[in-house]
Amino acid sequence: GENVEQHPSTLSVQEGDSAVIKCTYSDSASNYFPWYKQELGKRPQLIIDIRSNVGEKKDQRIAVTLNKTAKHFSLHITETQPEDSAVYFCAAIENTGGFKTIFGAGTRLFVKA
Amino acid sequence: ETGVTQTPRHLVMGMTNKKSLKCEQHLGHNAMYWYKQSAKKPLELMFVYNFKEQTENNSVPSRFSPECPNSSHLFLHLHTLQPEDSALYLCASSQDFGVGAGELFFGEGSRLTVL
Image 1 (cartoon, chains in turn brown, red):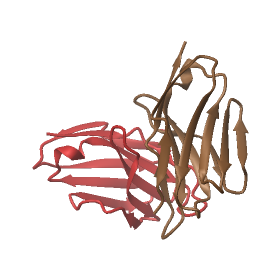
Image 2: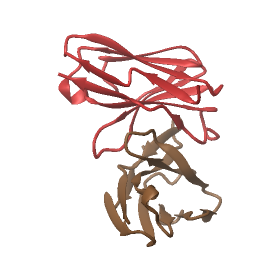
Image 3: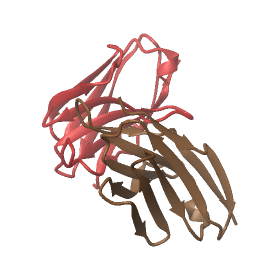
């Protein structure tokens, strides 16, 4: 089945700097890659997603890139703000024997003011 | 009420107790899920229901028993749990199940502590 690895587990940046979180997946049949943000004590919420027919997607300060050949995808946050501090989870939809969202272990992002 | 609601938000139980977690979604979605969230581990998929039918049991021990009476309600019945079952249990829903499932909408979670 699908396995998603996420790095780093913790990331600390200065306000205004960029943050990059990287994930790799194992199942070449996976075709949908969402990113969720979970603030402290809150529910995970989708912030951006990408399907395998595109290589990059951008939404204001957030962008995601996908390299299908290498089976990795990344989240880029520019001009970070304190409210970006949260745990970010990448995920892949496992496409064999059923459709399951498989998550990475999460990255705790701290943005220092 | 918006989205996905879970009750109780916090639960403390002994290993011999029987309790249930409840999830309700107000989004008209057809698929519902239980995930387990433990510290520093990936969200672990436990059960999937599509149109009230269980489509996935991700090798979950029988001390966890799901129930889905209709597309809007999902329960997780707990019995004879172990301390290592202490975690945040998240319910989620999606419009459909399958390649077009798209976004998962999560509840706030039920924080379970097993003594």
